[in-house]
Image: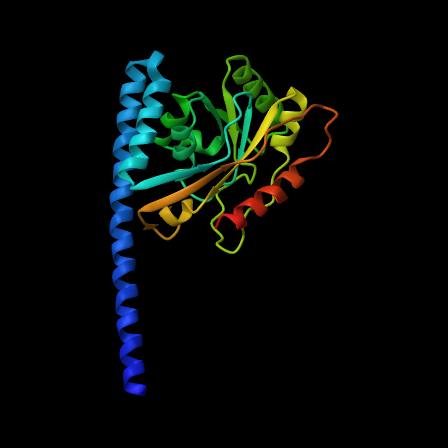
Amino acid sequence: MLVGLEKMIYVKNRENRFFKVLSRITAFYATLMIAILLGLYIIVAYIFRKKEVFFRKLVTKSILLTSGLKTEIKGKEDPEAQMFIINHKSLLDIMIMEAITTKDVLWIAKKELFKMPFYKYILILPRAVSLNRESSKSIIDLLRGVKKGAEENRVTCIFPEGTRNVDPNIEMIEFKKGAEIVANKLNLRVQPVVMVNTEKRLNSSDFRHSFGKVKVIYLDAFNVSKDSGEWLDKTREDMIKVYRENL
């Protein structure tokens, strides 16, 4: 009986090793395809600046296709939404949001990312807003950038966690107050968006990838103003609840 049990454990360990190796091979493939497609986007969008949004959408949809990723969308995107608040667990989150919305998205990105070779052009071409967390006037620059985007009928996308959440034991990191301050000051209409299983499809922390489905859940949108007070923590609670329900 013990011999049989040892054989079962041995076979299971072999299977686990096989799937880990396979996951890393497909992760290399997915990462390579993302790099190639983003490289093409930079070249074409630089040449045809007026068609940048079109090429951005085309490339992100192609990335999802070549990554073997399907999206299941629940709820509806509010056509009046001016800011999307999204949880962040994978590099794919940006591609997914770009691909599923027809809106011209305005991303908020850390200043450090604008200094990275190659990657900085992915931020400069779609005119992302740079956020310097170490500067006391960063919130002013953020307000200006979001206000200009709203005037151009762009929708601001922000990850209120401030960084990618790589801890599998934490659904969402504590939200930073920047999104709340900006939305209140500019009287924006906010829509929370919850993404589920994106880190299972592509996890750059331990270089894993798998083909399959992710869920994108649109929560109800709401209007905020300077009199709205604090609503971000409650929104995080609602998003965590939806996240758990859709795992």
